[in-house]
Length: 93
Length: 213
Image (cartoon, rainbow over all chains, first blue to last red; front, side, top):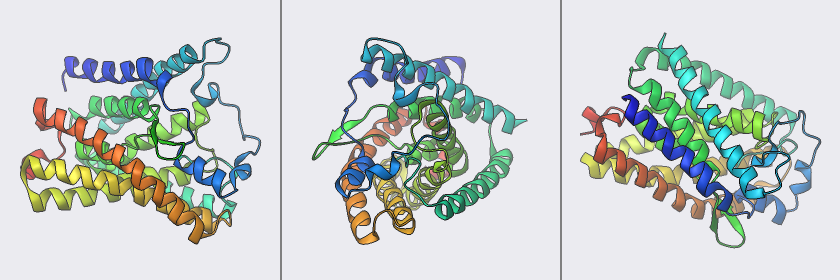
């Protein structure tokens, strides 16, 4: 992969995260829905063992839910890119 | 299907952690041997793409949504071991930064999505791609394997819920597999769109492309 390919791929991921994530379906996902219907959802309502910096893909303290989601998406995409690239680079050594 | 804390019993999540840690150790060893230069940035790009795509929940029937798993997609391009590492990176960031999936359940989530969904899915893809052959084999294999990987991973998730005493297998399994047969269709569509695009512009990025051809 040359630089152009990398930038192109990363750009697509960032565009998805910025432009589309605020419009993702708010409905519960498969497991959540099953938990709700089969009556074990409350089992998951335990105190989290630690505090995540950006819980539920929403940047804290931003009024607009859509912008908060986009921001979380940008940060997450960049972190995961760095981590995937970094791990691969370490393994290549 | 990111399992939150509380759904799994300590014995189930700790055993899942052991399996995942062992699996990742094996993958790290394997990837060190086979990693090609062009795969290094591709692992970053795939992780970024799959993370972003996993934010995009699409509606399926009955007030339920689903999103890409991306395991077969990652493995078609990177092979099963690097694919499993990429999916694990995504799951770790989702858990630690976005509170998506519990910390105790992270081992189970890695087991279900990075190993069942990615590695097992990859081998089904490989068989189908070989039998059918050519670009058609890659596309058909990716479509069927990606659908199947989602259904299988959700079934294993149901099994873990049952073993934990959270929901009996005869209830959890049909419910989880049922809804994921629908979510799997979305998985197959997105996987084929991306693989089709890669086949058109950079077919050499497909893992073992020379062999598959």
